[in-house]
Length: 214
Image (tube, rainbow, N blue to C red; front, side, top):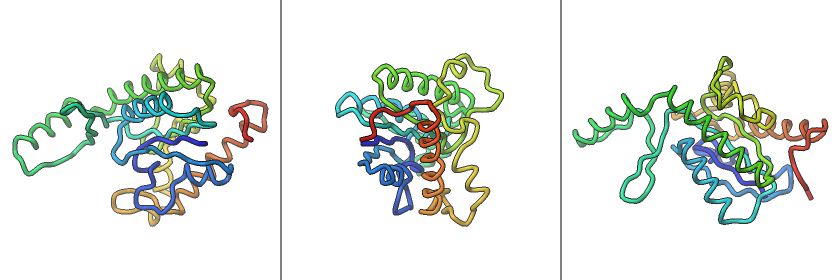
């Protein structure tokens, strides 16, 4: 079984397929996709840990990290996703959104938080001997990043950390994206091709990323 998590780009919004499911099909595995449209990287960390603590251990975890400035808000005992530039017909709520945009939805602070989430999740997965692959759906780790947490992260299981699928593929195939920047079936096939090749190469050339495939 493959467990996948991320935002709308991993969930397969506006597409009849999603790349984790395509990868699972090539590996003759079942895919459980808990990605959530609009989900933040905090949600990805939190919901992945919650799922793994309550279910059978998967053969592989695929994480498609989202844009860094998203975050979660606690509201009436639940977590609510927040993405920049939300609007409301209520003047007071709209003013609150503008406050969040100005002081909370900060890309650089979000990057620092994302690195902490990534290290936390990778440490957890490796401590339980759970195989995983990280990749970026939207936004990436800057090539010049010198943050101490980035230095501590296991890069061997992170596919092209200084690039993001959606930004790169949108430049190559702009006609394959909707007005809300969601890729079609072709884009998910492209992502699946690259990640599946990454899995095969790292398995074939001595680095045992995965346990028992059978």
